[in-house]
Length: 445
Ligand code: DLL
Image 1 (cartoon, rainbow, N blue to C red):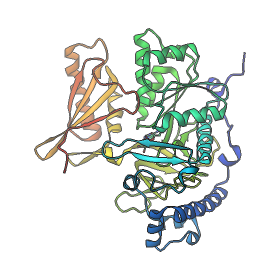
Image 2 (cartoon, rainbow, N blue to C red):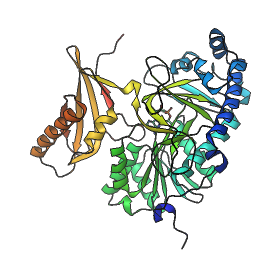
Image 3 (cartoon, protein in one colour):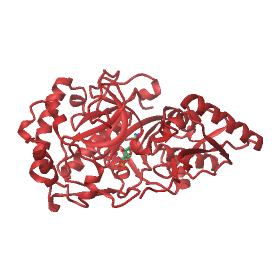
Image 4 (cartoon, rainbow, N blue to C red):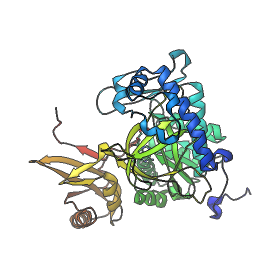
């Protein structure tokens, strides 16, 4: 029999894929960041007209960066910059030096296109391999990759990382859920890569086929690409019988693997040798004190084809540089609460869907599937929560659940909501990023 992994023995492991850099003292890490920041700003200044114009307008030249704090003097970059310079206007390398393009389709307008040189792809594979390893994946593990392949960065990002690590990848992509279940069982996958909502959908289809994934070989889930609450983590861990690890990333910066949890599961290590992280007040643009919530801003430090200066992610989080039990020195992003764009203002109260999710998952007789429907009633916004009862609950039970949920949302979040309990299987299941909000408010013109 092979040696038991630490996940099985319950001990905390201290082993790293890139030990030297993952445990580098923070002063040394800061020095490395400063050197790389200078090179990145030079790359942006010399090769991207938009960055040059903005840097000149701010009176900044690459040589003016004397310390890491000087990053605050750099102008921000936002998503619309990429759209306004569609498709390749922000690339710092000519087409002949590119190796790959990815794109994300927004809900409106043109997609956001991102490009990579071969070296960018190599760094990405390294960071994804590091992320998978820190989550507990090991060479030789069968990795069932249910992130979508294609223009979305999830599929190919996880694929290259798993290969780089020496794992055995099953390039499944999203969809054909019944087939996914069969292959997970037959190939004895140890690792599942998927969005958290799709992982739940796979578990549900498995049960319908009479397969209990808790009895499968799955031990680790590398879940990300959408916000999910701690309560959702517990739900998934209980239903599939694995350790659910949070992984973060975005295509504008690279793709998955910008930050990832270690086996301590107490925040996601942001890989600071390749990225510079800041948390700012979204209103004032000024940094918030460490530990306070704000918008995550990321500067790439090694990207050749698409250097990004102070990219405003619109993701809301907190960061800490406190030491982690795993021994890694890289700062941690604490769970992404949600995106600025997804924040609902209900009767003056700011609410993220994940806060509502956290309450829903504590209530009995509810399935972990929900949607929020936002409507305009007069001049006020109104939210209806559509949830699903577990199989076997009676119609009277539906009414009792609705009252119970409304009561708990009111007392925990402070908003009054309509709760609509529906029959099992009614809420659409996701195959990638779940749609949590249906916004029926009239569009502003
Ligand atoms: O979702 C990359 C990715 C793929 C990350 C697979 C993790 C796993 P985009 O499609 O560009 O890239 O979407 C990026 O998704 O700004 C966040 O709002 C959200 N997001 C990504 N990971 C997480 C996470 C990929 N772990 C956007 N928690 C980001 C919460 C996440 N939100």
